[in-house]
Each structure stands twice: as C-alpha cells, then as structure tokens.
Length: 270
Image (cartoon, rainbow, N blue to C red; front, top):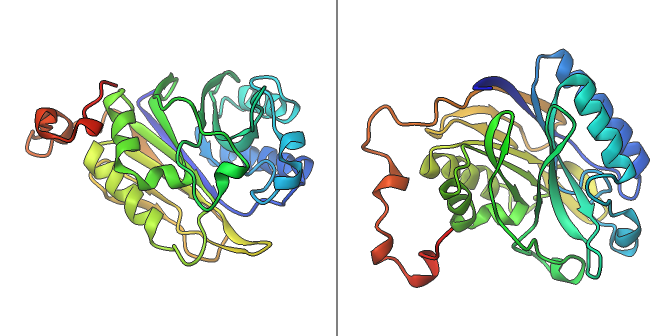
C-alpha cells in the first residue's frame, strides 16, 4: 500500500488502568477508522501508563497473545487498521521491555521493538531491547523508536540502512525537554529520507508534565501535522511511501555516506 492516511494520538495514559486504557485505545481505533485512517500510532507505555514500577511485571503482556494485545489485534483485523502501541512486554527470565508493538491490518504482530537507550534510571525497571531492526508490513518497511531512542542519530540511520521508509516513535517526553523530540524527529526524516510519525503524551502523570508537540514529517522535513503542548489531539496526514526517493541525487545521504572515513563504532555492518 503506497498511499494511506496515518494518525498519531497525542493523549495521556491512566497509570495502572490497563482495562481503561485498552477501552480508550479501541475507541480511538474506531474513531480513526471512521476518519479514513489506515495506521494509528499511540504513545510509549500507553497500555499501562509509564510510572508503574511496582506493578510492571504483573502488567506486562506476552507477545503475541497477551489479553489486551489480543483485543487490539482483533480490532485491528476487524477494521483493517494498522496500530503501533506502547506497552510493557514480558521478558521471561529478565525485566520487561519498554516496547512498541506494531499490529498490521490483518491482526498479526508485524514487529516489536524494545527500548534500546535508557533515560533517567529506566535500566532499573526494564531490560534493553536486544535488537534494532526494520520489518516488513502491509504499508512498507518500517522501524520503531521508543522515546529516548530517537535522540540518537545512529538508531534511525540503522533502521534506514535496514530498509525502513517509515519510522514511528512513541514517547513520554516531559518538561523541561519540550523541543527535543519534535526537532530530532523532523531531522531524522530529512537525514534518512523517510516519513516519521512521532506520538507523545500530553498532560500530567504523577510528577511528570508531558509536553505534547507530536508531529508527522515528510521525508524532506516538511511538517505535515503538529500538536501543541497542552491539548489532546488526533493528528492526521497523508503518507505516500513511493515519495521517499529524492527527485534529484543531491541530498541522497544514504548513498553519499563515506563509511571508510567514519569512526569504527559507526561502521559496523547492519
């Protein structure tokens, strides 16, 4: 599917209330579908809330048949709607992963990405995602980034070198870091010639004030949709996966790379 309408839902999760958050996600999927959306992105840890350390293991879901994930998969299949949702994912023998899960339009789990870079002591709660890979979907090849992951250019570049033409990032970005993610994700789109869908929380959760500013970005960096710092919003934009190749070759950064000149840490094979 080359052309479709994508949406990011800038909202707040309710800590510990998995059932309530699931019900809200199912309603959001229905509302998005009614607006002609084919792919919907929700924030980091949406299913459970972010600050749930004391119940993290109990609320984590197994892949692919955790109870809440099963309900989301069934709804995705019924609506033929793709979904990217943040949730804690069970990790037998270790701490859970802070993950994004991509459910394709047929209800299958097309990709799971555990957060690979930790911020503010997250390593005490989660194990890092063991891999960073793009994957194939009915929309095209996609990569996922979880919040702080998007602040490292190497993550998005790795996914682009692995063939991703669409990056989706779910976040729980908070004050005083308001401008970081919007700027970074716009840049990631430009420097890798990919679409970027960025979905952040907005509002309050315990001690955090989430700062919104979600966005959808064209591969040239053009802003297709933008959220403010305080409002819940469903942001829509048209995506054309065929429009990820520059009409001229002057800004073909991936092809113009000179890996032989770079630091060895940047030149490992993908």
